[in-house]
Structures are given as structure tokens and as C-alpha cells.
Length: 76
Image 1: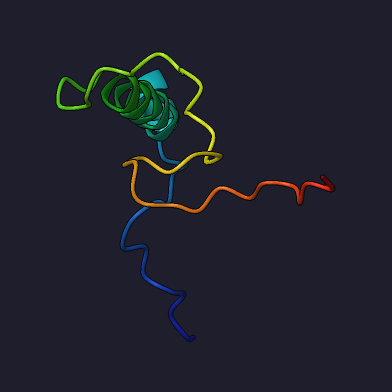
Image 2: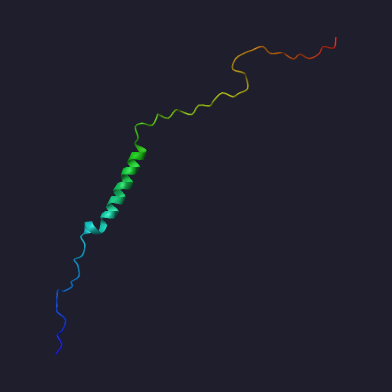
């Protein structure tokens, strides 16, 4: 008579993961996003923003120099 297979062990279902093991990737993602936002918005090395003032128009030369004045011809 042939022998039956020898039982080495019994397979059991592993225990359900804890809340931390199941959700730690989400916790680290949220903490990383919050830390990145904080670092991006609270940098101390950025120069202070200057108020926007209108720049002078380029209609006149900055240094007065010799120039010719055009006068109309007189008809006298």
C-alpha cells in the first residue's frame, strides 16, 4: 500500500495588517506635501518685493546735449 503525503505544516492566512502598515504611505505623502509647501512659501532668503512704480517714459534724452532748433522760415 502506498503511503500518503507527509504533512509538513499547515498554511494559514497571515494576520491582517495594522492600520499603520496599511496607511503609512499615505501619511508620509501628506507630510511630505505639507513640508514642501511650507518650505516653498516660507523662504527667508527671498528679497523683499518692491512696490510697482511706473518707470519714466523714454521721450526725452537723459543728458541735455547740443541740439538744433528748427524754426519756421519767415516771409518778411
